[in-house]
Length: 100
Image (cartoon, rainbow, N blue to C red; front, side, top):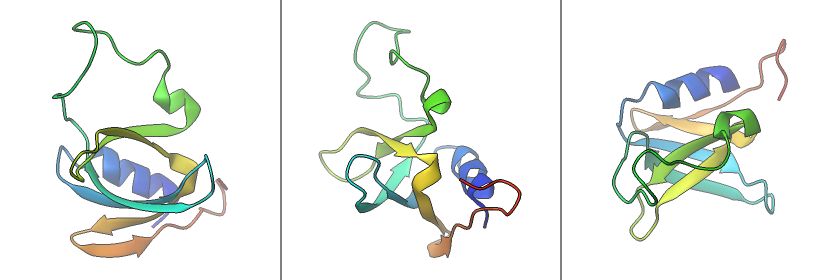
């Protein structure tokens, strides 16, 4: 699976739980999480307000981490190494015409 296919898979998950393994930008460690898109609970601020930046412009996907006590997290798209498709982890490769 290419990196772009992995991103499209996550975006098309329609609120289903997906597994993602990625390399954190902050310290280079590998993180694996079960997460989902489309969660609207636990949002803070005024109705309609959002983050002060556009996550996609910064190469990030904002997801809700399903682990207890967690919340919204940002995944660096260039750091995605594996995604869980129907319970099976699939490695993510850079496409030859579009390196990370």
